[in-house]
Length: 245
View 1 (cartoon, rainbow, N blue to C red):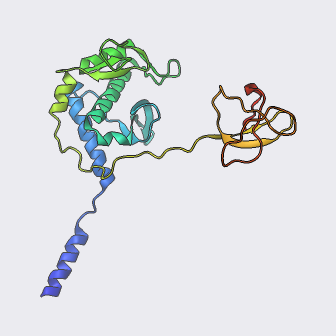
View 2: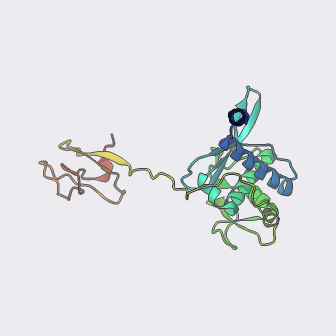
View 3: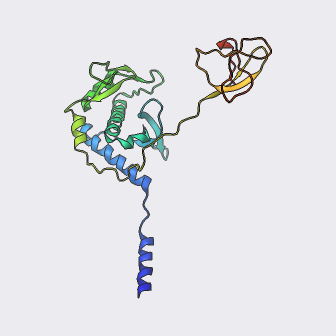
């Protein structure tokens, strides 16, 4: 009897559908999108395609019409940094900001990723930000420029976004990061410097434009120290003579 019970338990466990963490977490992001779409955009925004990757200068990005389904239905892309999952307020602010980009594109056909003015935040975008309770500012504080390049934002106290955020369920995300997110650091960029006179070469960490490496080979240029751990020759008389290989 005990053996039959054990076999039944094993059969029941095998019958249970396997947990799909990625699908579960993505569903949470769509629930978050639904919440702000309802409270701030009157449910007018279509679902985007979410993608998560490290972004060098921001926490989020919007790109229109990146994905297409069966050569028919198009989807806009919202990029989010994985580190945002550690901070619900920053995540919600960034997502809402991207939703403003989506709304602005749907209404005007323009995106700040356009080739004509890439990275430029227009007055129309700024007005839509203020409408949802995110105040555009070049400083991230009251008093900054509302449109232009490099525009940040701050949350309007008592505004629509703050109210919608406060109504958000605290347990909306099923999965949480067990350890703090630490993006992999890229190794320093290295280039090969070559002396235009004696053609000696050395691979070094890329030097700032203000630093001019000089060759200490047999060609007679002034000497400078070779970085620790390297051996050989440091190059170049003039910055414009650098040859990158």
